[in-house]
Length: 333
Image 1 (cartoon, helix red, strand yellow):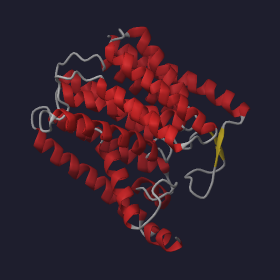
Image 2 (cartoon, helix red, strand yellow):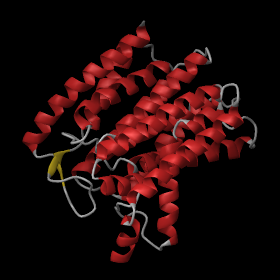
Image 3 (cartoon, helix red, strand yellow):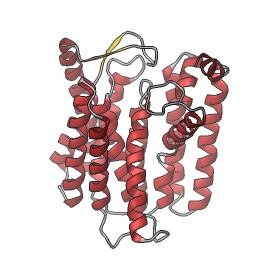
């Protein structure tokens, strides 16, 4: 019962908190202006991820006990939110941002008991932890990169956090992170009420960076607690789109830290002239991935292979839908 109430209360709290945030931020002029690299038109309120996080954390703290892992993850997420909030208002040093990402990732990896192996003994301890640290820092950044059209990051958060709770429930595991995962999933769903195309508010870095961190931390714990395959499956679409795109940009000699519109989902949204069409396809893919993550509990290799095919099919559709956008943009550069 408490699980259902967590999702419901977090959803409602997020809808209300985001509405209040939109009104306040709009009066204060906290908006993102459209430019040649953005995927929206006009000025849109940004930084709404702050309301999402407040709603999620408030509901979690009200309904669930606080354990050691929360004492590490919640302050780390708060640190990222603070740094990212100031970055939304006025760009801060990339070294400050990167330092905060590393500090948060260290906290998340440190939350795992030293006797537990994240990669199930495939790597020596030092490499196990170093690989997890690198992967989490990369995931924090790629999640931010992927927050480029209305609704996509919210849908991904619901799928990853909600997927974690589903897999843990099916595996009949008692996890200290179930409550936090449900609260984050519910709050992300509530945020979508305002962030669905055409969006009234954007997450901003204050939302996408901490959500990337929390989603990645949940996957680390999912790998430790039961299934490495499930932990790799749930975020597979975001990982594939961002990683393939950055490799393609490196191959073209582009500066990968500069804003762009060449992710698979961005090119597809421009081609079909609809954010919602693309995000619905992403949501369908993610629903399948949640099912495959459950399958991974008993058939990890088969489930992971099917997940690769599922994500590959989505990327293929995006590539076909985008038509000649890639060629024309490359020519313009």
